[in-house]
Length: 69
Image 1: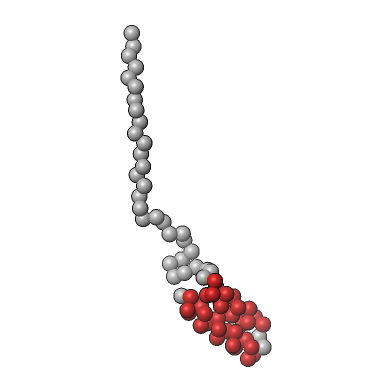
Image 2: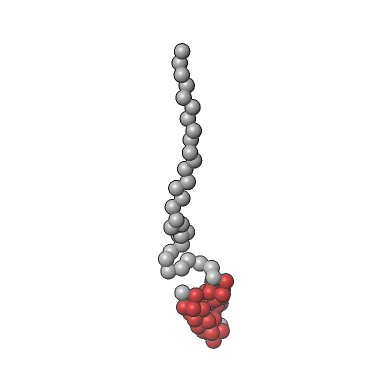
């Protein structure tokens, strides 16, 4: 995905320079920046990956028997 962003951003920058278009130049800078600094959402979306390991940590509780008189 980073390579695709880099290629599209580079192409947008070249075309922006050729056509003297500021808007396409800004779009190209954003896409190249996302590719170089690994920013933005990937192919799996913007969600945070969950941990696959389940933590089943349970504390043993000690009980004391109370006798009534």
